[in-house]
Structures are given as C-alpha cells and as structure tokens.
Length: 450
Image 1 (cartoon, rainbow, N blue to C red):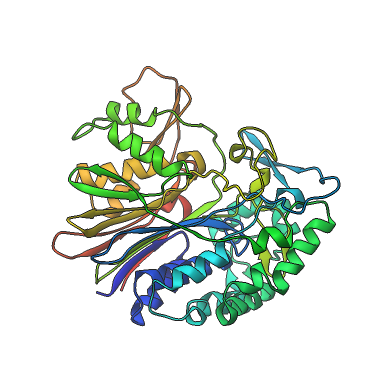
Image 2: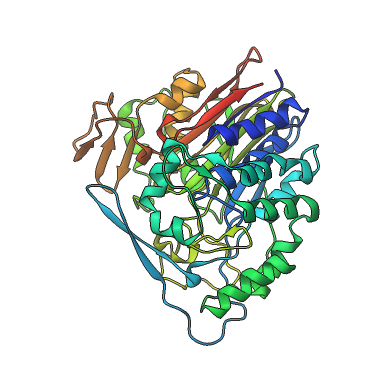
C-alpha cells in the first residue's frame, strides 16, 4: 500500500489517490486533493478561500501552515459598501449570511498550496493537473453538492456557477485557467500579478476594502502545532491565533480515561462560542506508507457571490462569528479567528491517526468524538466516523439516533444522521501497519486506499 486519503468528495479523494499511485507523498496527495476540492466543492472552498494544513513528516516534528483569511483595509478610502444580507432557509429555521464586495478578506489558498508543495515530491504543475482537468472538462454535481447549492443558490448564481441539480455537468473554464496559472507561475499572479490586480480593482471599485496592498502583503504563517497528550498519544492540532485547536485541547484535557457519555457531554461544555452555522468547510486527511501525515481544512465561508478570473472570493468579513466585536472591527492584516482544527495523532513519533472536520462550531466536538471512538474505544476509522454524535449548543443538546442522553438538559433528537454534526474525514495506520480510512457519509465523503 502507498497510502490512504479521505476527503469530502469522491473526485477530491481520487485526485489525492492518483498522486499516491504516482509515487507522491501525503503532502502531494493533500495538495492535489485540496486544489481539486476547489472544483468539485465550489461553494465550500476555492482559490479565494483560506485554511490550515498540518504536515507531520515521518520522523520529523510536525508543522502547521496557516493560510487563513486576513482582514483587508490597508488602502481604504471613501465609503464602504454595505454588506449584502442573504437569507438561507434550512426548512424549519433560517439564517442570515452577508456577502458582496465588503465581505471579502485577503485569501490564502494559492499561497498555502504553493508553500505546502515544497513539503512534497511533485512540482506544483503536476499537483494542479487533475483539478484543472475537472474544471475544464466538467464534473457531475453529486447529491450533497446539489443540496449545498440549493441552500446558497443566490450566491451560486452570482458567482457564475452554471449547474445546480444532481447529475448536471458543471464546467468552469476560468477556474481551469487560474489553476493552470498557479501550476506554471506559482502564487505570484494571485498576490502581486494580474489576477491580484483584477480582483482588487473590482472589489475597491465596488466599495470593498480588499486592495492590491492587502494581497501583496499576504504571507503564509508557519507555526508549531499545539500539542496535548491523550491516551498515550501526542495530539498535534491548530495553535492560536486560531481557536479550534485550543478548544479541542481543552476538551481532551477535560476527559478521564475511558470516558462515558456524560464525560463527553461535560467536555463538550468547555466554554466556547456556540453558533450553529452551516459550516461551509471541507477537510482532507492523508497518510502515506512512509509514515508522513497531512491534514488540511479549508473554507470559503458562505462565499461572497463574486468570482473574478476564476477566483471565487470568500465572505469572511461578513461572517458574524468571525467578528465577535462587530463587523469591520479587525485591523488590516489581522488573521481572522477560526474553529478549523486539522489534527494528527502520533505514538512514539509515528503517525497513527489523521483527521479533521467541517462544521463551524461543531468541528471540535466532531473531532473529539471520533478521537475518543478510535483511541479510547478501539473502533476502526469508518466505524468511528459513522457512530452517532452529539453537539452541545449553549444549554441545549442535539443528538443523532442511537444516543440516549444521560443529561437533564433539553434535547433535540435528530431522526437521521445529519450534516449538522460535521463532516469528519479520517485515516489511520494500525499497529500492524494496515492503512484504513473513514469518510463521513453526512457530507458524501469518500476515501481511497492505494
């Protein structure tokens, strides 16, 4: 076996698997998959998105690449265009997002992909090839992507998507060209070149803050992952200024050995912001046969509804939970907060478990429960992902079928497993060296062992 990958879409996983078959390492597979997710999961991520990547090279210290969104505004003059409210209906509930030119933050994905590629074996040009092919030739919309599109239909149309229903062919020629540019020229066109000029020129002309100065100043931050011990393993996850990894560490530290369901509820009650957002994120986990691990989570927020030169821009400045002190309260250049928590668990220096999740405020709880299922309860990866989950929102507990809450809190019982509880993609290497994957059916995930 060369490796295993789990991702949020079959074609995303397939792109990473192809890199593993070709002799690439876990980082090659993760970057190829991440770029393909920009094509196959266009409302969750994109070249105008942001994220975090943990790489744990075999026998070396793990590293965290922070390519999260940055607040713009270095050259702001004149009046700012108001944020455009977009109401999304979830059946029994509705939620307001904010889009438009003023919602766009400085993106990090092109810079993150280019730097991450230096930890792999293949040139960036090869890593974009599958993504560019799917963008140019098109791919069929699957069930989950059709559902996401139905929720965010006004933004999908505004961003120029042309296929919305399951089975329809989505062709994205401008994105294909942008991916080709990334492969041949690196990240420069997106930050100091003509693509940056086109993006910043349009945004500033329409009252947004993102300027050429903001893009030119963008840098990926290389950080030491946050570390916590659990059940004899070293858990490496996203450090501050992101919030997700620190929250996950607090949850793990609150758990006793062999935690009960009530212990999990107490851990989920660790102080945090409880916002039940859609969670427009996607996650990829990879582990290769040499023991190198890579975990990457990316997000476009809900998307701004603006696509320029193949770059579908984020709406991070319009995400209420990223601006707890009010919209536009961040200084230019500030990294925006995040619950994303790509995670690698090692034992005696050997990568054993690689995971992460989509799901906004539910990310840490989903990761926690899967970690407990594997490390404390001995479940294989897929069983650990499939197991029913809980989420504590304030003093209200949400549970999937199969859980009988040992709690006096008010409880909402879901009738079936639901995307509300995240999208956790997991890969593992057993003590015998067997590689296994666990893909989250809640968001039509897929895994491949090659």
